[in-house]
Image (cartoon, rainbow, N blue to C red):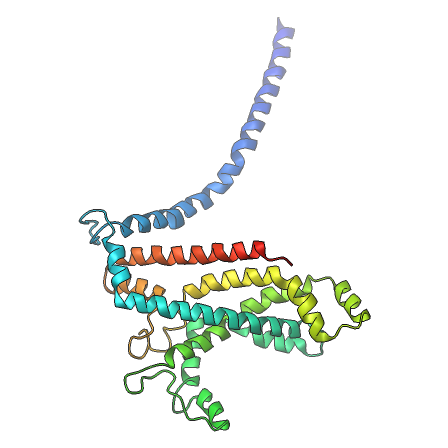
Length: 314
């Protein structure tokens, strides 16, 4: 009997150990992911769901009361003049800044990819905006665009061009306001775009360039026939990221007019409109509806770009 008990005990211990191993193997990853999952649920998923619900709650108040569910918030937002102005300004900004920044970044990244003495200095200069606060830099650009002592007007004067009222409103009209924001936006977008494109250039096999030079191809033909086609996947990636970022333009406007949307409130953007409705006017339903519209616009253009990328042959 004693011998039989001794044999059963090791058999049970082995089975228990195997069961514990299976349990640990199955649930240990879950325990490791639990803090991240809770944070994602509380700070990301719940706010998204809450915004969607508030967008359909008519006349929602901070007390939690509302008059019912419907499309009133969307009707108000789409009929609001400030929101229409915000959509127009945002689209102008996106479809101006992103292409210009992408083209300039391709040219600059191609130059920075050359092995030239002292290139590290130029790389540091181009990447500097990425490690500085956009608000702090925006305040510096505010003085650059100053109509009296600004560097921009001084540069224009060298070519005999009259001073431009970049940040003001001459005669109640402020056509140069959005141009100033676009110039600052392009400059602000360049560093990140250059980094991505430079990494794409460095992944191109030098064999292609060697073969092209042996065949007698010039630098221009090499650039358009080899560099750009092989860099196309990275270009599409940067354009998608930059377009998403550009649709959320906000920090570029705040420092120029001390928190106002333009010299005569003519430069509303979609994010600025959402912020104003949410924080300044406590219209959470309108802000939520505008946020949903912004999300749908960004999602549509992102999917469109991905579709074009799949159809593009490189």
